[in-house]
Image 1 (cartoon, rainbow, N blue to C red):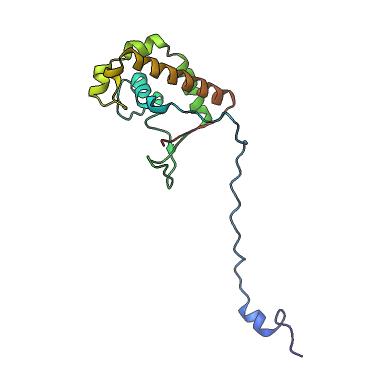
Image 2 (cartoon, helix red, strand yellow; image 1 turned 90 degrees about the vertical axis):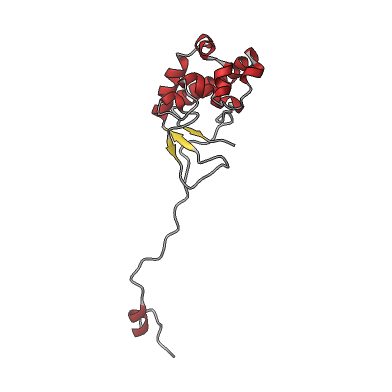
Length: 162
């Protein structure tokens, strides 16, 4: 009968000194998803950005969060670029800033001809006139309520375009 390899010469000579590879631990979300943890500003995102920041371009301003900023999540693409993440502290700051903006402020900044000239998506502002402002305001209010809820839950924010 042959000796067992586990204690034999060959087993000792060819035993691996490296530990067995470990599978990575799965990512666990700290908070479970909630039914109302997603928001949508439809095609009003660029107009909201413009009315909040005064520009159609990307900006480093916190109120430019719909268009730019945050931490880009590399290696992912939703079809229209990589998602961007914001911390719960940034969401709290957004909440304060957005609450300071009322319809009167947005109305004063609303200039359909200038917005179309600057190609503020979806370039319907001259055509729609005051109805365009109503559309923007409706989505701005939804965005503000969404950010307020995220802030009250001390949540961060993930933004992506589809």
